[in-house]
Image (cartoon, rainbow, N blue to C red; front, side, top):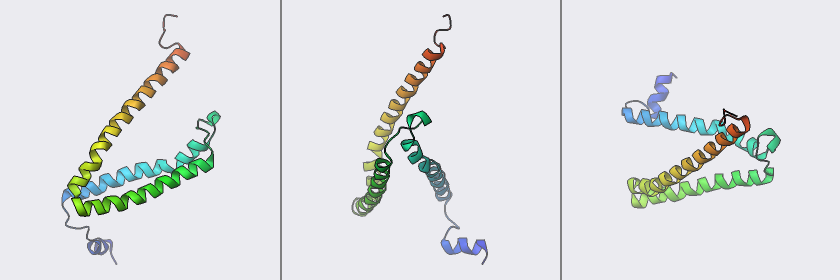
Length: 131
C-alpha cells in the first residue's frame, strides 16, 4: 500500500491550508514540551550541587501523577462543556484566565531573570566597572 493511499484513507488530503498549519503548530508545540518533559524529573530530583532542586523522588512522582490525572479529568470536563455550551464559549472560558496567568508568569520569570543577572553582575563586578 502506498503512502498516498494511506493519507487518502485517513482523510488528510483536500483539507484547507489553515488545518495543515494548525496541525504543524500543534505538532511543534507538543514536540517542544514533550522533549523537555522527561528531564523535568531529573532536574527536580537532583541535588543543588548538580544544579537541581533536590526534591524527594516520591514527591516528584506524585506531582507528575497528579498532573497526568488532572489532564485526563480536564479533557472529560472540557469535552462535555463543549457539547453543552459550544466550542467558542468554552475556548473563551479557558483562554482568558490562561492569558492572565501567562502574563503573570512571564512577569514573575522576568523579575527572577533580572535579579539573577544583577546578582551575577555584583559577584563578577560587572555592574561596578570603576572599582
